[in-house]
Amino acid sequence: MEAPPSGLDRLWEEGEAAVRRMADAPPSADEARLWRARAEEHVLWGGYPALERLPPEDRRTSIRDFRRTYLERDLADLGRVADLDQFALAQNLLAARTAQLLSYSEVARDLGVAVNTAKRYVRFLEISYQVVLCP
Image 1 (cartoon, helix red, strand yellow):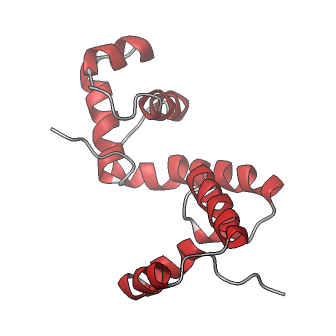
Image 2 (cartoon, helix red, strand yellow):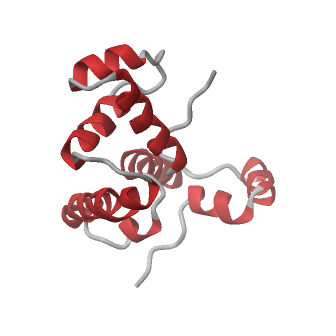
């Protein structure tokens, strides 16, 4: 039996009408706990629908496979990357710097590459919607 949609799912599906209904009839304590748990899961795993259907122990494998596919197939469409492992390291390093000032020279130094290579890596991540730079 499928679980009823959580409050977050209802918000995504119904939008403003769901917000108005929830304001009129606040959730019970049990519902609030379920919504909090669902929100924490959403923050941890993101909103990728295919992951929700998988048992938690298979989610990491699925994400790893998805990332490998991106690196091997999609990145090849964007441009030439000589070392996929180094690009994957750049991906991790940049993810760890989320919401911080970006210094291409620091990224290049940490990766052991030229500044232009670091800029190219960031550009590939932008093109593939993995990075959004805020000026």
